[in-house]
Image (cartoon, rainbow, N blue to C red; front, side, top):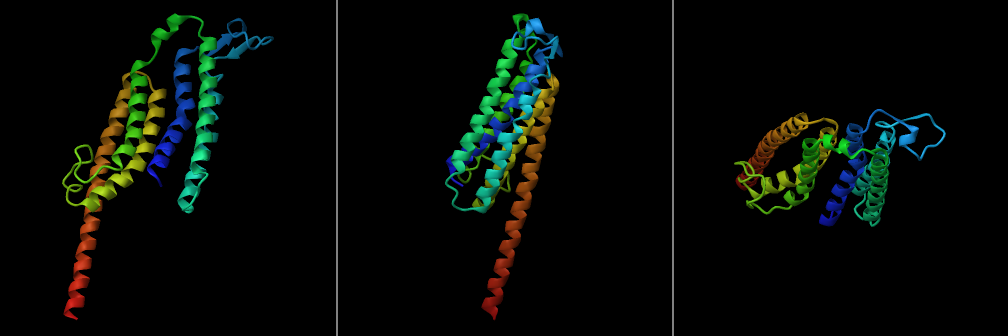
Length: 236
């Protein structure tokens, strides 16, 4: 897969969960129920659900996310897939459309600006940082051997093969893990979202270290087997 396609895939994945993230913050700001005089777009109804009214919009993110997953699967099976970027573009447009509906729902129902004082800035910060970590995976994937910015431990620095394998493989995991953390952080308020993000980050670093060890061990084993075969052929 080309570098540009990987970036586009990451953006499509993050855009796919963006409606769910917006729903989370909307539910924190809006009350559970709202009277019809506060919501003029629905005349004739006595009462409308507010905090959960637009949650269906967030659930619709399953559609663009399904498009991304199916396209990604087909891309893995077919070497030449020229329509892949266009399909991801459609997915992103759908996600942004659903997100726009969500934003409109919030703006139309918040009539008192003082309600914005309760905005969860800590949770929002964790969401933004998680998304940046997910996107940074595409930068990390193509780091040269022993580059200043990269995964540095005694195993990745042992050989260029281990370095390349670790950086290439964990980048995909990093995108999905921190996209998931962004969604979870959006639905958890205050410092608890920071704890979730910090725990996920620590667990990810521990896993990366263990994975680096296993990759290094595998390469060392293969090297020993190769040398043994060469020696056997030489003696034979």
